[in-house]
Length: 366
Image 1 (cartoon, helix red, strand yellow):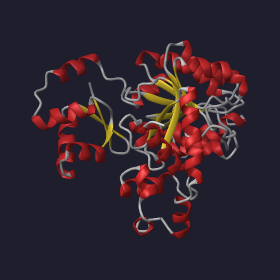
Image 2 (cartoon, rainbow, N blue to C red):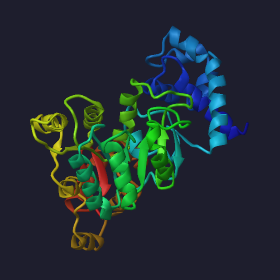
Image 3 (spheres, rainbow, N blue to C red):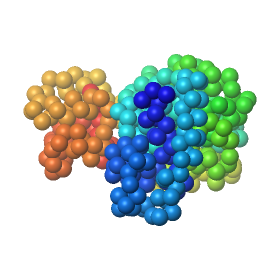
Image 4 (cartoon, rainbow, N blue to C red):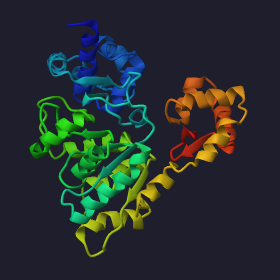
């Protein structure tokens, strides 16, 4: 086993410790410096970490998780699966901004995580002809902006969104609620294979994990976390789509919902989101384009190019040229105090250099 594979073993094992979830796992990482160090740090030092008690300490020194992790490393290598750990530079920044982002993600395919537009499209498994048609039309109208389409490969709206993305030449990501050794539902296996060549299939679950009902809400946090916005097209009063929308709202991401006939069951979820002001009413792609500030005019971009920038503004623009970032991340990367960053961001926004998004997230406006 190479040094890289050995480190991966510990990274995977960290997520397998009984009682260590994504949040405590990150606390342990911050305290110890690496996943391997968590397992090598003496008990008396680990107990000082918030949330770590005696029972959890016993779980950490249990070597069974290392054996299971080693088995997974071999599977990853054999199947040519790509692995990203929370501490990796290439870990998707949008997802990293979420408190409960998974410690490990596994994917097959290829995707540019720094691409500037990611949107999720979700909805009922029992989609109507209208719902499927609306999904395709929406994706077609969004295609000129080249967004990555994220969904869950389920029957109905999910698979319609993936197929529309493929049809109109967009990258798409299917997020699984199980390991990458299977496809659920199996009827969508061919679509999954096509997605691997035009995006990726992704999960935070190990191989041999079954598609259990309780896995899907957890999977939905990745769908919401990877995206700038979540779009709900047809949903009953209860279901996974509403869970995804709720999670997206908790991440301060935009949520859009397509209204429907109030007498129809498939419209109740979307209508509720709109009525309770948890989602923006969506009638066409124009609502998404405007809501996410994709409609910047060419002349505005040309004007922006000729604005004389201060040294501080140039540093901010250079940083946001890579990806949209939370203000705390900007503070960390630039090494300035919070008040200076906040003031520079405000001045840059006044000049039209950057855009302020919900949740104190900023992006370049050119």
